[in-house]
Length: 598
Ligand SMILES: [Zn+2]
Image (tube, rainbow, N blue to C red; front, side):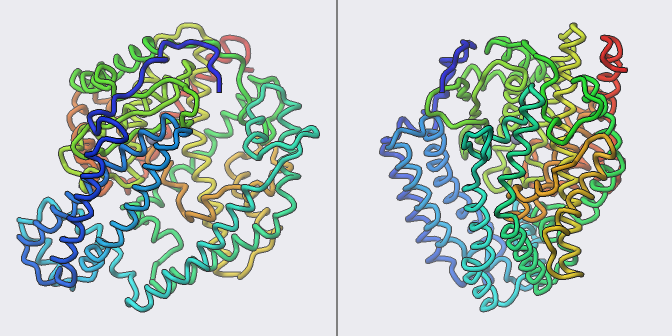
């Protein structure tokens, strides 16, 4: 990897010494051994005895269980972070591998505790839940027990778990291996699937078309096998759901996400009802790139060149100002990430690609990881990860278990922070063409995160339903259902000729059925809070920060109430979508102004 342009981020490296001095700091080994010994002691003390504990003793046990996990989490976080900045350095890889194995051993030691809690009689559990001593652990305890109505007997569970290795997990792995082996013949060159897909971002339409045709050809040979694998996984899930008594194909996922079938249905209905936003945008985009109509392979095409680059200092200023305008205290917290070296920013050789935030580092502060290039996306990524950082920072006092958020609310602060920063970027950009570019990027992000995920959820929904009602689905049938659900979103704004087999490269459908809607859920949840902030101003600051300070100690429905929102009310999801529609209005007006729009 080479960096041609300097951004000023070259020396912005994080300081991991708040965790450990270095990879051979003897305290790492001490912590690992300490966690190990404490886990053995914990097992000795509580195994088979959880049902007999008093409320006070149970509090003590959960505290200890959390303490053990916190010690170990700190060590393994360090290993992850240290490895991320130089993946070619073998001591780093070795430490991470060793601790990962150690973690699995620890998990096995401690597994009984959750199982015994889940197994408590309702009367015993209700008494615990009613006890004031356990107030701090009430939500956690409910989460541990929420699968109880769907758990089978112990011998049945044992058989399911052991057979799944040669059953559903094996099918999923076969799928991954087959997909991983797909090569694409692009203009006579043998390229990876990712490389071919990346060409859909090309500014040259003919190149995009050739790439899409090459991908379609490459997907063809294994299609019958992938169809069979998908059918098998969907059947396996229907058997599992039936035996366990889940009401719908998505119910188990909703439960895991800490949300309800009603809230998810409200989200889906609200999004599907506004597919017109997608259609309007793609019509605008066709005009902006000089086409009568987009083909499916044009959706990622760039709209002109955006030469705007920010140095690291400029990016820092924009992001800190955006957060600081929202609340001075929040601005101060965000400043600390920069001042105290909690961020690793530059593109560096052997560094992991992408960006993330290590949110709940026990006893310490979060760390932000990214590859800063100076383009617009990079500035928004910085804002996004700092949102996670703020969330983790504010929730940290709750401790590891209560700070941890489910997928559905994990993106609240990141999306919110990105929205704040986007508004700021827009406010300081006067050039109409660059404003249009900024808006288009924002709308495309929204389409990818919200509408596309919901349209994929609609595909999963018809597939799981049809498989249950009609039996095995043919290749042609899957293609038909895919095109139907996608065309419902695109209307006539996108030509889907050649798109039929493209359902078959999306790994979530196989590995995590029902997963995809959570992206839309998290995004719209955060945006509806943001909309409320725009309307009500400073009055929303403290309630919003209360949501962040609550971490994962409450279910999303209760978090929403803190900011006066009701997740089963479709209008909350609609208000997030209205925000995109408003951005689209402005983009259309700008396009008309600069003579591109009509
Ligand atoms: Zn995120």
